[in-house]
Amino acid sequence: MRVFYCCVLPIIRLTMKKYLLLFSVGIVFVIVGFKIEPINFGEKSFLAQVHKWSDSLRLIPVEPQETDFKSEEFNGRFYYLKQKQSTRGYAYLGRVNGCEAGGCEIPKPGENKVFEYFDYYAIYDSVGAVSAIDIFNYKATHGKEVCERDWLDQFLGYNGRRNLKVGVTVDAISGATTSTENFSLDLQEATRTIRALIVRNSKADSIK
Image (cartoon, rainbow, N blue to C red):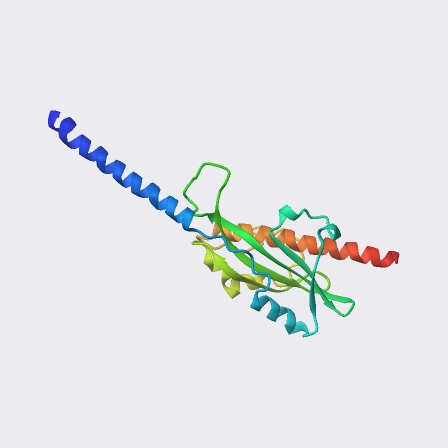
């Protein structure tokens, strides 16, 4: 036993400290090395989808005072799809947070957390139903299955009237819980904001 305490145990402790240090350095490297890019609001696939309707459509940003949403609730932009003076549809292009950088299962203290993310767009018809949707910039290490066409197509026609709950009204994906839940919630709230904008504009038009 004396041999264990004086010789073996110190070696075990030293080895454990070594691996703990390497593990900590690896986490810091992943977090520090993770770069957050600005959202590309000129995404080519987004513009191509808009112009599938008509080459003459113009994207006009929705001003925050035109809606009841608070700017901090969304990391993105809402648009009118205008053809001359008429509104042909709407669009939203924004960013959704995934897991914390470094992995979903790694707890990190502090308020200044860094998240992985992905960007997407949804294009709506004149009554606020989703007519096109896509994820075009996936910068997360987990859950990339949400980018698959078969999964995204379930949101076509969505108009905000029902809650998007993963496992109930939205197909669940094994290993992509955070991505599916955050995406579904963001799309739900973006769609309801579009619908509220439509109602508000229709009331304004009726007063004129």
